[in-house]
Image (cartoon, rainbow, N blue to C red):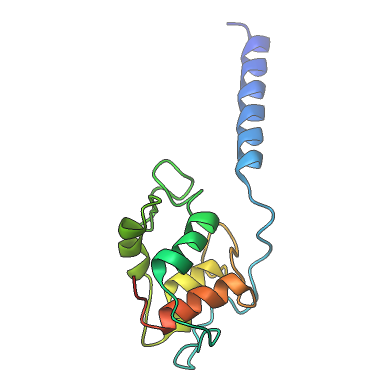
Length: 144
């Protein structure tokens, strides 16, 4: 193989890798909040004051919409411990391991969703209704 064809092949491979990386990037999540890594000491939030929030009907749809594209087998975050399948019963086990009902706002699930130490950036910032729903679910005891 000639030197020119090797250069062209490498350029084509690099271009394809760049296009793939750019296509997988999610630019709509926004920057990580400046205080996203700070652990709250308030004992947790109080949620939105509404009725009981369940995993299956309230939290799970948010996780499948906001997280499952990367946190699934074969996804960009497929090598992490948080993997979603789309099945609420199976996904409950993954989500409950990231919650702290004694200090809900310090739960790893909420911290990651707001961007703290999350490679995908902020998925649901603290002021969003989605974040508040997840907080209400954890504050209510993280029931299935």
